[in-house]
Picture (cartoon, rainbow, N blue to C red):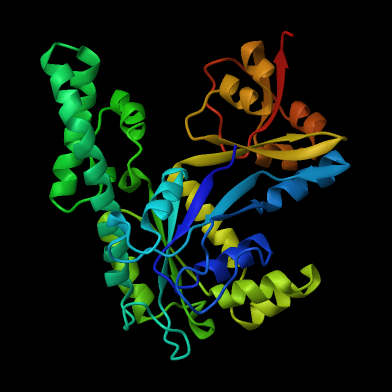
Length: 365
């Protein structure tokens, strides 16, 4: 399981340029005018993880299969989108279908690229988009509240519970705060998410800076970082132009190009790691002569759920998980060495999967 991340923002902030770089494709037209991206472009990219290549070398795997992440390039929002301005309704519908939002903010000056608001102010831009999403959520919830109130008054327990959750969100939204700030009990989280609110989704701010600020950031990205800290949101600084150039280079030339810009790795790597942290995801591995493969589960997932990511039959017939921590697998130069060192473990149904676990599942068919 990977995750689906929607790339949103005002027009001309670099969303499509970033999308092209991330997916190494020109599927999204990057042009200097609003609404150049009319239909959402979808692209799958491999999640970079150097541990996978190390495991493949040790296991002498014939194939390396990384886990994948889906990026959705969603056209630029503008003021009034919640009321259908621009292509508002379509954009909002597309955002509802993603797991998290990568909110691209323009943190660079360029007289050749028009800013839809006529000024460079990423914090204001973020507030513009957030406001439109909050207004759309509030309108959606208020339409649903009246019929629910009637059912609740008639004594329907489920209607009362759903109404209580909706009111938590409505109270926040009316106060100008996103729905994700609601204080929820553990058992309320799943039904709250099912309300399909735009502002309930976790947000990662992506500061798109000029090439010279890719390694250090600039005053605009610093302002965004301060805003993200106040909100408890994630933030990544990237130069979409650099990412676009890196994507077009042969693999052998990328490291030197990045080093010349004082960058250790592509922004994609940092973006994915930040996204994983945002959604509470982790990676486990399977490794053997046929293939070394990465898999994704949510933090806190137990062994049967991890087995189910590979195949539903594995979860239903789960018996046990043969498990070696990544570091122990490497230190032992494979499964045999890890066994000899006493690092090979048999885990049952209650085992909570750890990031980097190398696993093999036993199940009854």
